[in-house]
Image (tube, rainbow, N blue to C red; front, top):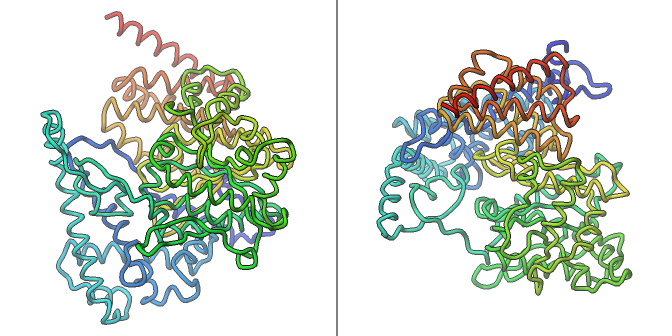
Length: 597
């Protein structure tokens, strides 16, 4: 326990009341396993170059592990044949129990990683028969019906590896496009989810058929996510249902997941897709309450401007679902959409305005500007950040709405929000890697927290759907895991430093975003700032490396930590703050001399 406390792991994984030490040790071990195996992007892409062999193998392993082999994934198949899945129902159940620290689940998870890697090394990189390999790994022969599916998986793996090794198309395509040539298009998506289908790089991208969103797989995953969110909320709130959940919708993420976040919204409201004879989705229809078995949850949807410009059909279908829920002949205690619409109608709002649920920037404008306000240090208090978020995001869309300002409706809905949700669907960017997360879902949580008079604890959940497993964490827990696996992880920052000036800039940007997270959520622990200072500023060798690569990036790192302390977002040790102030002054002098020279 002393070691865990010294490393601040008791913040990440606190010991529960009446929990035995053995149970706590198992849960902490499971958390450390997740940290160790967390997928991270620890280098900048060099245009025209292939990724290192180690990174290619990780991509190959994670992609094939989650591929369907018949009716189940490779991971599920290996676990089932090895007799390690019986007590958990399915792979997702095993992963949930492993996070709870159950010894049997932890052992199965530890066995699975090396087993998948050996299958890939022996069958994809090597020439071993996949049926024999699976039998050797699990002790059981797979059914004869699996022969063709396993062979196809091996072929896909070899094709993916060949495509990962061939990145020459990027430079050729750039030169061809600059010469006025036509670039053929290929599907957009995520490498782990979609594999070889999105390779090679160097092509124009086309997106998806909006009439088939969400896909059948995305809808199943969205249902699971929504149900887990509701279960989690009720566990944390003495069985009470959330009245409204705010969901962020981004355009590119919709393309990558084929609409998982949209499926979450449909499920919360208590709907399901209705398909026509061609397999396209004609509408989202309400499920009868007696079949749903719970209240309909209201939703507030924060659109990105790219989603607004790209998915008009989806916005109209979601609007129709909300209108149907508002007009349903159901008791308000079982239909929070109707409850909130009726309350606004009683205050004099029109049905058109009262059913608005999709908000973002005005037509033709882009960005919250909250991230710019943080980056420019152009704010005095959270009042400034909140006011800018409302001002920039009060335009309503869907149905007949074309961006009309409905500030009052937005603020009314924010007052009913009990939880904010945002999906993280790719290893490419985590919540600490880009400013868009704190400026979007972070500022959305801030706005809800300031307006909900019923609930002072508005949780912000990040839903990680990087693989077949679904993980839901509070923002603070997600940030801790992000900082431990990236900003404070030598494997990550050494990879960035190897990228030179650009890598130093990426490190510096993460510290700016950390300040942004503190401003929005107060969700960054003091120890994270202290460890960041020790790692990058107070270590003489590291400070000099960064300064040589990019002195302004180094100055920004120190300056942001001093700003956090000055704003009361970090309770820094006075002696450490004095050291940082001296370092900052020295960096200012060196940069000024360098610019003068």
